[in-house]
Length: 247
Ligand code: NAP
Image 1 (tube, rainbow, N blue to C red):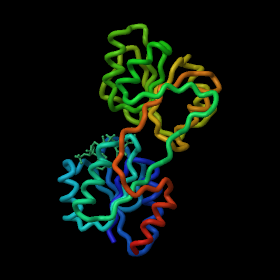
Image 2 (image 1 turned 45 degrees about the vertical axis):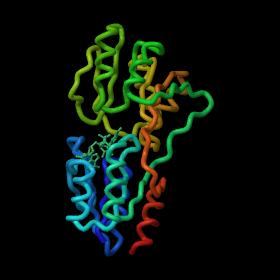
Image 3 (image 1 turned 90 degrees about the vertical axis):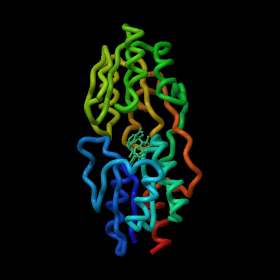
Image 4 (image 1 turned 90 degrees about the horizontal axis):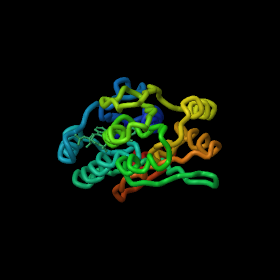
């Protein structure tokens, strides 16, 4: 059976590594090609967009794919909709592997917003030194804010260098997991006053939430986009059990 995993996450890497050990499965992981040096993958892979939902439908048919697992980042909305629609049209079983969201607990100072643009609008009310952890895509709102508000300063952390250089900013190139000591120290060293994060869920980048809580620091938390209705699991084990139903 040919299984395609829509990837770009640590969960997709771990899932492929488990599935290649199951006889009768051929695993292909699909990456968008955003990261210069993606994490090492076990099994076959392909890189680059499909050319919209029609492109994905054609790919599924041409490659005779039997099952599709969407293990993309929970904020990668477009590809998940394409996956759901393409599977419906091509009549292929479809599963979404979605990490649970982070939940606010006592002591957290989260300001929940719907978009990166909304995050940038609210930052100046919360502080002048902002730690941007929402990735190197969609930096325009922070760029515009820096232009409008020269007293703002930004620390941006991303895996690869951003294409857009924000005035008054410093970039740290790093890939999680990040540990609590490291996050605590970073927030202190750079005198951060506010953090911007997506609600990614998972453990790899959650230490900053604890560090912020300890320091009573606000986090502008960007909510996940709407996702298609689909059969969904929240763990790699759940995805493996789903696949085994078809073998
Ligand atoms: P997106 O907005 O949902 O997708 C934009 C376009 O990128 C899609 O229409 C598709 O192009 C292509 N694409 C996305 N994921 C793909 C995949 N796994 N394989 C092949 N093509 C893919 O996605 P995004 O937010 O830019 O994220 C891109 C990738 O980075 C995803 O794989 C995601 O898992 C990973 N990622 C995203 C975030 C985030 O915060 N958004 C964080 C960490 C990792 P076509 O229409 O041409 O097919």
